Amino acid sequence: MNKFTTLTSIAVPLDRANVDTDAIIPKQFLKSIKRSGFGVNLFDEWRYLDHGEVGMDNSKRPINKDFVLNNPKYEGAQILLARENFGCGSSREHAPWALSDYGFRVIIAPSFADIFYNNCFKNGILPIVQNNTVMDVLFSFDGKISIDLDKQSIVANGEKYTFEVDTERKRRLINGLDDIGLTLQYEDDIKTFERNYFSKYSWL
Image 1 (cartoon, rainbow, N blue to C red):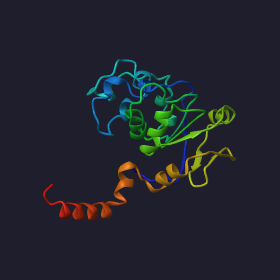
Image 2: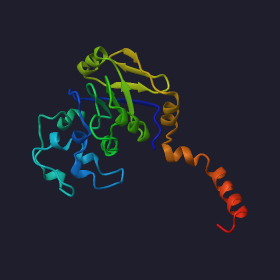
Image 3: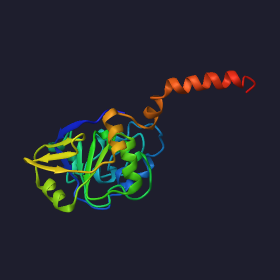
Image 4: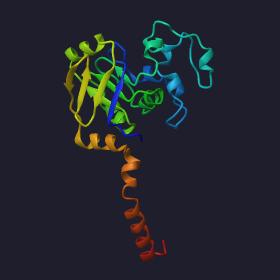
């Protein structure tokens, strides 16, 4: 998992509440358990005018020019702004996979669905909770936003806002540690235990 320390980027303003995981990545794309390749189908039903299926050439599909992600000004954006209850619906981990594969590293919203919120941290995405007043300011700002995880701060248009994040989750993001990476920190201890265990119980 990539480390997260600071990030400065324009933000995509997805001005919708209750965005569920089926909208983030529709069910027909859940056939793969790889974490990559989902970005092209992020928000598929809003992004394209036709029905998407696995294996389609997305470059030839008609796009919805009114959908914010298709606006060229937001190309390369790594921050997503949303409204209340982002990531609700089913618990599919493919949703943060798709967001990450597209390039998003930060999502800022007034609230998140619990399982989605937890899955974001496990996949290198920083979900930030801000109240509606701050969200209105961020939605109205058209420049780059800076995020500092260590200082737990957001800077936009010269104004600074703070956010809360669990200490352990913060440590993992800063060091780029998902659950597997966390376990691998103890790789030598695990190997030593296995050698001793199988030496003692050689009949196993």
